[in-house]
Length: 323
View 1: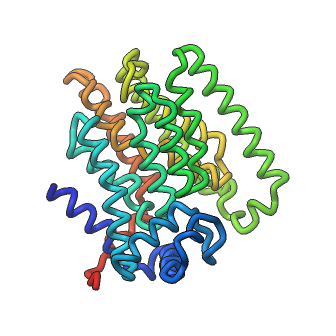
View 2 (view 1 turned 45 degrees about the vertical axis):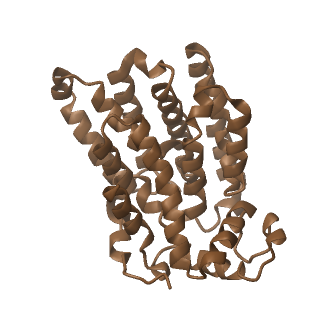
C-alpha cells in the first residue's frame, strides 16, 4: 500500500507546463466546466480532440474540483490501480514488477493520458479473455474505445488467445506481413500522414523510428520462449503474455520507420512488467547463471529503448495543492 501511494504521488505530481500534451489536456479540462453532460457524449465539443468517455471522466472529476492537478491524481490512481491489481494477481515477484513498471510505461503515461488508460483497462480484461466471456470482453473493449479510439486494435487478442498453437503461429506470421505492407504503403503514398515526422524515418542513428524497441521485442520474445518453452502456450497468463508480446513485436518490426506503429504497440508491450518476473520464476539456478548475460542485455535494452534520456518525469515533480 505504501509503495502504491508513493508511485501514484510521483506519477501525478508533475509540472503540467513542462510535459508534452498536458497543457492541451488542461485547457480541455477547463472547457468541460460549463459543458452540459449530454454534450460530453459526442465528439468535437472541445478544441482538443478527446473521446466522449474521457470527457465524461473530466466532467465527473470537475464536479468535485476544478483543479487539473487533482484530475491528474484521480487519473493516476485509476491507471495504477489497474496495473497494481494485475501485479498482485499474476506476478510471481511483486517488487520486480513494480521496478519494470517504473522503467516501462510509467514515464510516457504521465502525459499520454488517454491511450495508456485505455491500455490498462484492456490489460485488465484478461480474465474475460481467459474465461471466454466474449460479451464482457467486448464491453470492456468499447469502454476503452470511448477513452481512445485506437483501442479497437486490441479486439483480435481475444480470438488469437483462443487459437490452437499452430493456427496462432500462422496467424501472427500473416499479420506481420500484412502490417509491413500496409505501413510501407503509407510511408510511400501517405505523404500527408508522415509530413512533419521526416526526422524519424530511417535515420542513420538506428534504422528509423521503432528500431530499438523492435530489437528489444525480438530479444524479449526469444528469452520468454527459450525459458518457458512449451509453457508459453499454457492456458492463463503465460499464453496471454505470449500473444501480447508476439503481436507487439510484429507491430514494431513491421512499423520501423513509421511512428504511429510505435504508439499502437503500447496496447501490447505495456505488459512487460508482468512478463519479465515470470521469466525469472521459470529459471532454476543453472539456467539463471547461463542466461545472466542475456538478462543483463535485456535490462540494458529495456532501459535504452524505453527510458534513456527521455525519462525526465522526476525533473518535473512538484509539490502542489489540490485546493
